[in-house]
Amino acid sequence: MLLCGQKTSDFRPAFPKNDPLLVVDFKGRIFRPFSTTYKTLIMKVAIYARISTSNKGQDADNQIQVLKEYCGKMDYEIFDVYTDEVSGATSERPSFKRMFSDASKRKFDLVLFWSLDRLTREGCRATTKYLEQLESYGINFKSYTEQYIDSCGIFKDVVISLLSTLAKQEKVRISERVKAGLARSKKKNGRPQISIKVISEIKTLKENGQSNRSIAKTLRLSHSTVGLYMKS
Image (cartoon, rainbow, N blue to C red; front, side):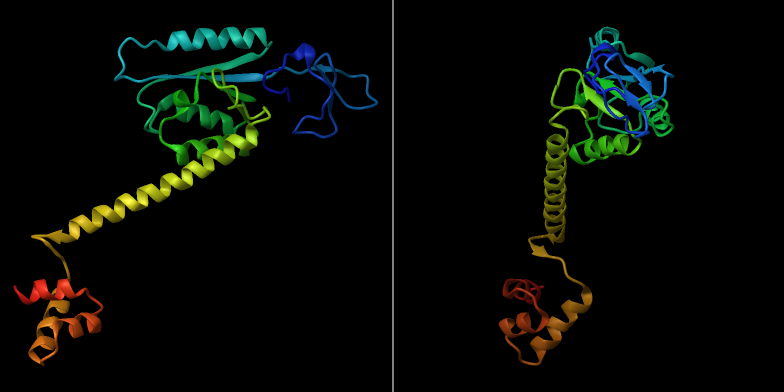
């Protein structure tokens, strides 16, 4: 398999991923050692372009034209162009889904897109998942405008690691927001909401002569919570 960013004509000898018994020479010909049979190796590329319906004036053709020209310069074969006109914040994109379906069948070697936010804007967790999914299929990926987002480049592992870290932080932030939301929802009329059973236990213990602090310790509640429900 050719490396991203390399022309067929300047590819140096290497062992393709799929078959360690095959070798590619400097002319881009693939062959088995000690064999005189050669076969030209051409990288098949899937171009993905997306524009958002909310942004007027955008034109996917602008992205596609530049990406096609790049493929021409690199001697890449364009397998198909996948275009969506929908927000990148959702995975419900027809061409996006079709592209991943084709990727799972190894119909091409590389997914080329204008920038990472054109591929997806679903957040770090989803982005990392998509890139790792492509890798699991044996498909490379490359951002045209972001040189460091290149599965064949030297920053590949760094980028994946960074996105994974950001995804974890994103998960923590979501969890914190959920907890904060639950805490707010529990407070109605200025007091935390507790079950009727606990309220009954508070009143029973109070009738038995226990102090608010003693009740709070017994039921593992705050002293202020017990006080609020004693007033009701």
